[in-house]
Image 1: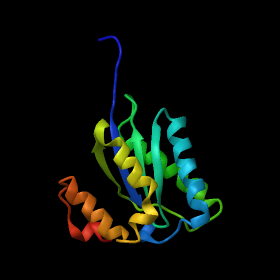
Image 2: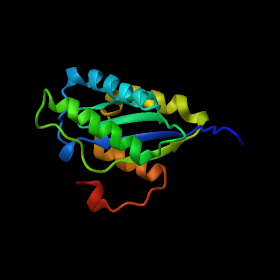
Image 3: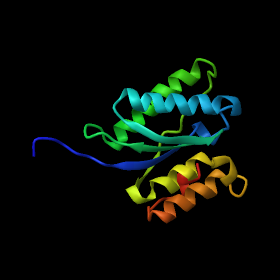
Image 4: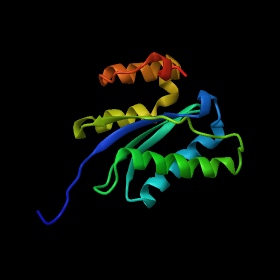
Length: 147
């Protein structure tokens, strides 16, 4: 085959350093747009970006040249550099999670990301994160998940 055709969507979740509320509410939307711009500048497509003061969700379409780990590294390193210009204590937690998303589930995942504040009226990030891990059958050590 002369060309590469890829359709890979992932729902990426990562939190702020020590899960502290380091994303001021008024800066959240700016950060979400900035993350989408980073993705676009690297040949990726951020279908949806949203979150809360202590974490972010990104529905990302990967390119044929870039895997999940490299994409997350680019997103986290570039956005933290930008955030530290105004908030010197800002940082992302070291790890992340990435869940595959089928084309048929794109709309529901996008809606989920775009309505994060409503979801967090019912449960906190730790509860949400554990539910995502369980839903996707990810084995985890509670020691590392709850840190």
